Length: 386
Ligand SMILES: C[S@@+](CC[C@H](N)C(=O)[O-])C[C@H]1O[C@@H](n2cnc3c(N)ncnc32)[C@H](O)[C@@H]1O
Image (cartoon, rainbow, N blue to C red; front, top):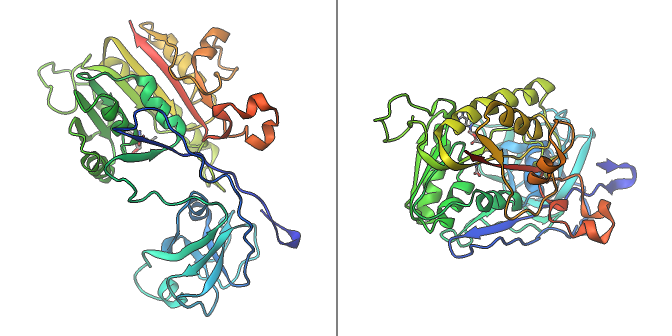
């Protein structure tokens, strides 16, 4: 937060891991730990909070994110970029003194007229960041056919699912296909990975990523996974599928996403945050039906609430007596959180990654070595269907 005297609040760092067909093991490189000594300039561009968070994650400023710019801004001007935390800056304003955070300096790629005074909304890079607050180099186009960048807990999910060559796997909520491609890579591209997502244009992303990584075992369909169970046992080509069609199912559920970081603001209310639990349960019903007996189901979210994590596990164990919780490998996160009625043994089988435990806060050597202490917020549960 911009405090009096131009002191700059330090936004959080992020953790990045790389997966690929050739790099099978879990790898992680911490690229953005160092806060650079960047001083704000007098010329200021204001962006919305979503755009500001993207800049902290290593992006340039794209034109649709810009809400205010200096009155006479020209292409090539050096500008400071501030993020409007509360969405209070008026569009096309020339300055803003509300609650804002400095995210770095850059060079304007457009003049003010192209941003705000044309009929069509501006597209493309608006400010190229030359001095972002954190050193987070872009991985766009780096080893595109070999690597797919994911957060550390997302990489853990693929290993916990434990797919084997020749198996048939269902990824129920797959776009943009990070975990799908990891699963296919872990199987040596032998077998079948069915990727479903409800949003049509996101399916193209899964297909593009699979093609770029030369993974032929992935088939992607646009489909609502709550309806992915067919009553017709003869229908095996594409969704819906007959019950017990898959050896393993990944339910990387749509969630409130409160574990995503850095994140400088959300416009969601309690109603929207609470809307995910029922949807996740509908998806869970389909997941259990589609899984073969003896098969593995992994449930994961990138959020931190009890309702979408431990409470879902407690509900699933009660609703589906055929399910038992399983140990996870690797287990580098913390255990599950108290409060949902799960026993200490059950909590120990769950894996929670907690963004609130930053390295600076933990202080003690033991804690600061823990892998869950500086990742995005994430949750993983593994079940066996008996
Ligand atoms: C957490 S994201 C998935 C991320 C993905 N597994 C990855 O690793 O790249 C959740 C996805 O669920 C999709 N989704 C939401 N409701 C769905 C439904 N009923 N059926 C299928 N997909 C759904 C969303 O479009 C979104 O892409």
